[in-house]
Image (tube, rainbow, N blue to C red; front, side, top):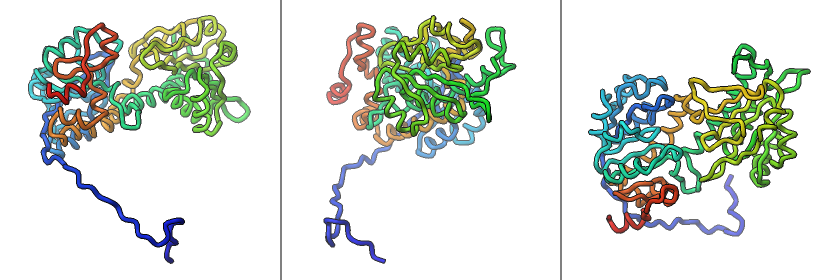
Length: 410
């Protein structure tokens, strides 16, 4: 049976108009270094063996420091089997690599290994960044690209988005664990509550502060457990979008003092998930609201790295993750995705490898930055210049526009 013509087009044939675009035949082979993360709480590695395999297959050389993937349960042999070279010392790895990709920025001990003109791709960790670190990279004429700033053409920040998805899901999993009997926090066991309840026993109430990416994934996970979910937000638009995407299975309310007091007073779980771009997270839940929460309830402040949403929160660590305040268990670990290092490493690999491929296909770092807006917006240091206005404002330093720098060939 012949398909009818599209309405309004009759029997006219449709033809594409093709334009031949110049394609660079140059493909630069890069030496890519993957160091072991040295921060005691960081268990992720920037590339999984599958990512190393893809880069080697594309003609690049990959150097992986011994033990880099151990805490994410990737053996050195797995990297070696992909064609990557396992290097014994970080200093040797930095000495070989044109491009270094890692999770966190180099520590003070690693800065001595960074080479003149090297390309560094990592998180920048704004809270820990210093003018001295930036000046050191500028003195070396290095190019620094920060995970936090890499932006896709649709305006999203892919690595930040994936880590926020992990944080939202983990917040609920963590809360569920600390509600159980047999799991001790602050010298006491959990209150023995199951998030989803059972027939004849109502589910737990999960209150989420914020309808952004962290809040959305916390809500999705809590609904999956069968919990009663309440989401509070200061703006109506995100609440409307979240209600629509979750098919109105959640209860929403504006984050006014009245609704905050009502919601927290009945919360078995309270999750802080509200962020403010470039600023401290809004402090929504006061200490007296926490004091009025049911005894044994759990507060997970997933945005503690931005100051947190709950007044009684303070940063904790993976080795000592919780404390009790007003008989409420507080979990406030800044680097939550590190505790699911294998999943988070695969997530990083999925986003990073295409960018690394594009750098190789461009023929040079300069051309890659010129043609790839995501990499360009991610760049904070380029050829002895600070190129992020937000960092310049933060530290009172001068900055130059990266597009002008690339165009002028400086």
